[in-house]
Image 1 (tube, helix red, strand yellow):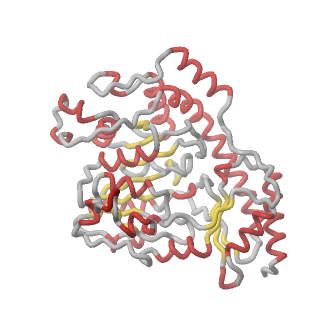
Image 2 (tube, one colour):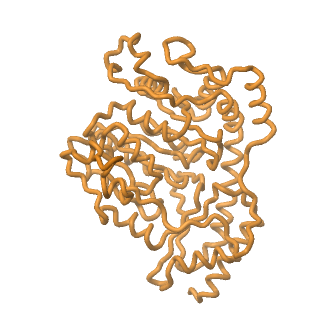
Image 3 (cartoon, helix red, strand yellow):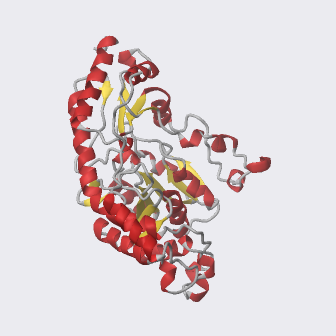
Amino acid sequence: MKKSFFKKSNSIGKEELSSAIKVIKSGVLSKFLGTSGKDFYGGPMVQKFERSCEKYFKVKHAVTVNSWTSGLVAIIGSIGIEPGDEVIVTPWTMCASATAILHWNAIPVFVDIEKDTFNINPNKIEEKINKRTKAILTVDIFGHSSDIYKIMKIAKKYNLVVISDSAQAIGSKIGNKFSGTVAHVGGFSLNYHKHINTGEGGIIVTNKKNIYKKLCLIRNHGEAVVKSNKNKDLINIIGHNFRLGEIEAAIGIIQLRKLKKIFNQKCKIAKNLLQHLKKLPHLKLPVIKNNYTHAFYIFGMTLDLKKIKKPRRLIVDLLRREGVPGLIEGYQNVHLLPMYQKKIAYGGRHFPWSLNKNNVSYIKGICPVAEDLHQNSFFGIEMCIYNLTLKDVIFISKAFKKVWKRLNLK
């Protein structure tokens, strides 16, 4: 295997260093207090970062958290999900999208994905809706938004809440709106391999004031604060410590200013790669639907195995030997993880959700498109890990063409 010479992504520079040092010199590394008052909302950097996010993403409210997993947990709690409620979600995602639902003793209901975008298939959603369904959690996987307007239309018909998990799609758009901002509530990850990062962290965005209030309470020990709030809708709040520190927020302010440039650079490289690979037979490249943009967190591809008549593993192994970086085979099928198949918690005790009467099935075969892509034909390049150049694109495309020629793929 050829030694990799590709430059790893690193958008952290002198400005972030200077900003972090200022916070350290101030002595205020966090200012959150889990009590009513101005410090309930955090220190000056946290609040400045949130106002910057509101302005950038054109939303009324932004709430920072210490991770996007924390953000998803807070979101599910903020929309009033109760034990036994059902939340529709995609299986083709990082596990936290569904685990956040379990956190509140609610039931994840998996709906299969589209073959082209790898996002949840809106045409399959309605058949899973029943009287227990309370929300749809859609994931903008790899950087391309789901068909959010169609999903919002379905949600309106059944009076459901829509959540956009846009962890991998920060900066991408549908028309003139950012991914994550069309739904009732959404947001982005800030962990180290995203387009912009604070090491760990997340941003929740919403235009709903009631959701915003609950998010703030769940983020910061809300049960100790809610007694001073006259809103009876808040009496069952369970809070956590999901608070972002001042150093991370200070870094986030600088990173947000770089987002547009980083996003455009990723797009430029991805579009060049699309041009160089488009003539390769039996290789389906990433789709960018009309009126959408793509963040290209992962450059996702599929093979037409019926025509190639070669296993995916052989092709990916040959590409790796040629030095192609960041290759992955398949992606997560969350519903096939042991916790859904076994439904057993620590010490052999069952999760409460496994004892429900909803009769929700997690057997293999419920999401055939996602399962087949994972098992057989999907592979991708993790563009999030590298700062690829146009020179790198030429190297990668030559490697692909060499492998195709070697295997006589026509």
